[in-house]
Amino acid sequence: MSEGIYVLNNIREGGFPFPSVVLVAGSAGTGKTTFSMQFLFAGAERGEQGLFFTTLSEPTHWMLQYASTFSFVKKEHFGNLVKYVDLGPILDRPADEILKYINDRIAEIMPQRIVIDPVTIIGNIIKENYRKFLFDLTNSLKSWQAVTLLTGEVRPGEMYPVEVSYAADSVILLSLKAEGNARRKYLEVLKMRGTDHRTGAYPVSITREDGFVVLRARF
Ligand SMILES: Nc1ncnc2c1ncn2[C@@H]1O[C@H](COP(=O)(O)OP(=O)(O)OP(=O)(O)O)[C@@H](O)[C@H]1O
Ligand SMILES: [Mg+2]
Image (cartoon, rainbow, N blue to C red; front, side, top):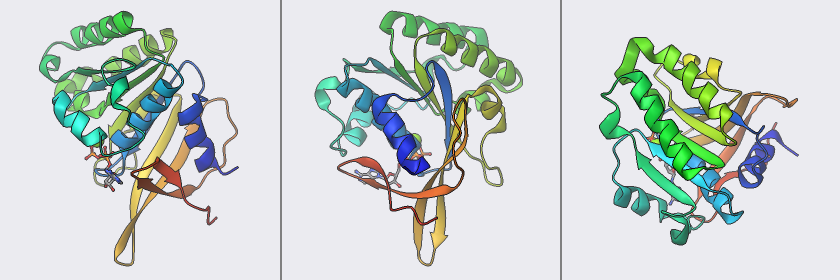
């Protein structure tokens, strides 16, 4: 089985090391939010509780509208097995209060699958305390019985947000590469704790029906 398919099966079957923290890194439009939504809705289909934190202050109806274009998103899970929390309004508070807020929501909802999308926004806001915040965040996330995806925006010239990668158990890189006039999407596993994964970027596409699909491996 190709590594790319292995990763997508993990999304569906919850096969990431448990508990663990996974960085899903990529520049704009590479599919970080879609990947994360797919992870939560696949969990919901298995009866697992999911919790989606947005740092972007995207209102719930916007998110619902975005998500409803995908057929893997089942509306009945929204607000139930997939809960949505906006961190935007509290990001001007001190780092330890942000952490406490996140932990309090997790304690209320007790999810098995958590997403923070994108975590890098918190870094842009709290700046100098960011490394310690990430260390404390990932430590506390691992004390819950959950797999957490932290999505990370990639700045021009960098491959992935390094400070987040140090704190994460696994790193998945989503990318877009120009091929002629087209841009093709890729998925690559850069590290996966506890597995002997092969390296290489797998071509993927995002479809309405299935979300992420790995195209026939060409390597
Ligand atoms: N309904 C859909 N059907 C197929 N592909 C879609 C659909 N909706 C979005 N996409 C694809 O998903 C991509 C955007 O994905 P997404 O919003 O998950 O990226 P992102 O990495 O979260 O971006 P950003 O950094 O802007 O938040 C688009 O480029 C588009 O190709
Ligand atoms: Mg996004």
